[in-house]
Image 1 (tube, one colour):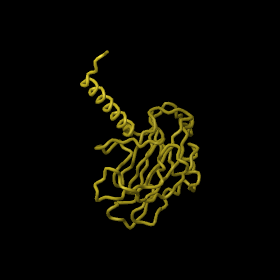
Image 2 (cartoon, one colour):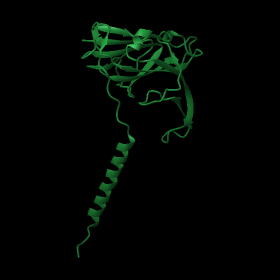
Image 3 (cartoon, helix red, strand yellow):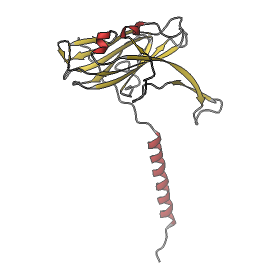
Length: 226
C-alpha cells in the first residue's frame, strides 16, 4: 500500500487554491485600454469638415445626439462603510454596437448649437463614418486619418467601442482638458470601405463652477496625411 505524505497533499491543495485565485482575478480584471497613437503635427494633405452637410455626407455619416444623465447606484463592495452610494452616467453610448436608432438626427451645422440647460451638463454625439475611395480629387488609400473633436468645454472620444488612453500625458489622448481639441488617430493607413463608429461624450464645465453657459462644438473634422 502506497504511503500518503500529508506535506505533499497540503502543498498540492495550496497550489490548487492559488491557481484558482489567479484565474478568478484574471477573469475579473478588464483588459487595459489600448494606448493612443501620436497624431502628426504636420500640415494635413486634406481636411474634411464634419460640421457641414457635404463633409459628413462624404463618409456616408449622420450625426445623432442625446443628453446623458447622472444616476445613483449602490456603492462598490470594497467601499468604506460610510459610503452607501455611487454615481454613474446613462447611457453608455461609447460601447461597440450601441443602439442609437431612437436618437434624433441633427444637421451637421447644428453641432454649433448651444445644448443643455446650462451649468453642468453632458451630451453624447454619435456617427458612423465609412472611408470613401476619393473625396473630391483626393485619393484616401494609404493615408493616415485623424479625427479632431473640439468641444466647449471638454470631450471624451470613443472609436469602435474603445477609448484609447494613457494616464499622465496631455497628448495624444482621447481625454483632454478645458477647451483643448481632442486629436485621435483613426488608422495609420486607411482604405476605401474602412468603417469607424465615433462616439463623443461632451461635458460642460468646469464642473465645480457650474458655468452659466452651454455645451457646443467648435470643430469636428477628419485630417488625412500622406
